[in-house]
Amino acid sequence: MKPTSIPNPKEKIEELGRRIDRLHRSVLEPDVLRGLLPIKSRLLPYRMRSPDARLREDRFRAASASYARTLADDNEFAANARSMELDGLRWWVPILRPDDEGDAQRNMRHQDFPYRVITQTREVALGGVMLDIGCNNGRMAVPRAILGDVTAVYGAEPDPLNYACLVRNVRDNHLSGLVMPDWTAIGAENGTIRLRRAKHAGGHKVIDAAATPKGEIVDVPCSTLDRWVERLGLAAEEISFVKVDVQGSEMAVLRGATRLLQQQHIAWQMEIDPPLLAERQLRPDDLYEAIGRHFTHFIDLNRQLAGPRVRPISEMASALAYILAATDGRTDVLLFSMA
Image (cartoon, rainbow, N blue to C red):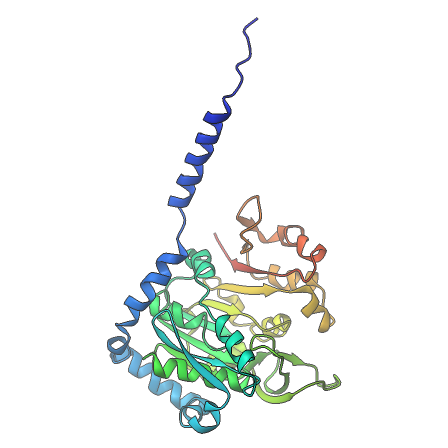
């Protein structure tokens, strides 16, 4: 009987190391994007003077009254924001407690650009126009525009202070005509909504009209996504990517995007946060069902998972079951369609 060979542990470790090395060579490195951003940003003064950028800027100023108004309003803004240097850019950060310098410093330390997420979504989100729903102060929109991932970004941000910082980040970094920020919420209906402001810049959320107000409440103009795209004069064929970060209002965004969701060439990135959905009396399954009507595949952007990266949309509920078991579980998914 032929003796069974025993694997050499050293050889197994060396082979595993080679596999890991091959894997690293096949994926995009976020640090490369971080290093490119200051170099690419030097071209912005030239890019914003191009005929296409000037035309976009002129059209956007005509469509967004909030944009021109915020550009001219420096006095009130200065007391509630701080500027810093971030990867070669002058970056304005909202400060919710301007009298607390410690709070201001903490907010500024937490500022960064989501290079990792950009690398994870590039294969389906390159080219064309990006819609950034819940744009904040531009953390996703600005690097994508500078790196050339998209032709232009149209950003919707409901919080007044986040929006003021976003406008100034566009102005101070020569992004006019490349990033177009509008002060609006995106939801299921056109009109006005109530926004409950949080203690941190990314936590502001829309509340129902019947909800008991707690904390600072701001009235904000609201539009459906379809109506917003129409008001801005965008053709659906121009749009390649929609990012949605709306703190539990994802279903409202989808309900107001009937026409846009018919465009199978558009990829969407969306946060799935069960506790925030529960605040709107919704379950994750409600959101999965709505998503499943419009896309064929998804990628869970949680890098810690094992198993297939690209999955059919029919597996979404089972694949994301882990977030229900985790404390404060949530993740972002990339949604798209393939033939």
